[in-house]
Image (cartoon, rainbow, N blue to C red; front, side):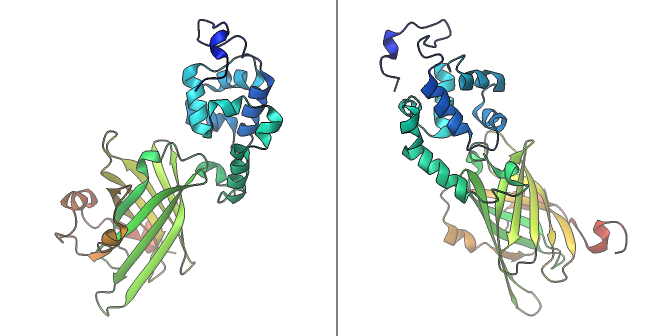
Length: 290
């Protein structure tokens, strides 16, 4: 879709229409969309548009090329025609109404960590879906705990949900933990910070790095948390196995549990990545007695 009558205007060598440069409605509408962002610079990075060049679009001294216009429309989820609506009409449009609702409902919108988790839909789009997350257990030494983690997009952020469920090998006591949090792509690493929803007594962080740019199958990293039994802090190697964006979660839940490291149920590649029981906990994590 192109702006009405655009084909009748004189076009410069860069492909922009001279008659469009400086159009006040376009500039005001674009500035209004930017007002809902954490920062213009972050939005530019997410769009892949030079910040200095984007400032010219906001001031009206330059008009986006067709390529950059598509990036702007895709990022803000608007039609090109919407950007050229009279500003008074644009302010009352569904585009802005939806932005206002998202702004109100965004998790952690007033927290110091909000900037880290905003605008993550695009950088984490290929990582959305379900994972079996494995790590060496500190509560049950010599065991591997398998959990189910799901990353989903909501209101411009990527949310995480994790379920851990296992029975104590000694007394068969059932342990169930549910975590909810958010994920961020920062410095070529994925940071997942989650809160223990049931016991409300812990925050867990996992730092991951993808192992392949072309194919998402495994991600390795480190998990930091507090053991559910003795309440000691610990860190352990972690491996996430990707199940896909449309995985059968009921089927995946059957894999959640506690396993021996040699169990054939565990993917051999996961066992290889985890290696021997690499868990540091309690006072050892600080290298001195508490």
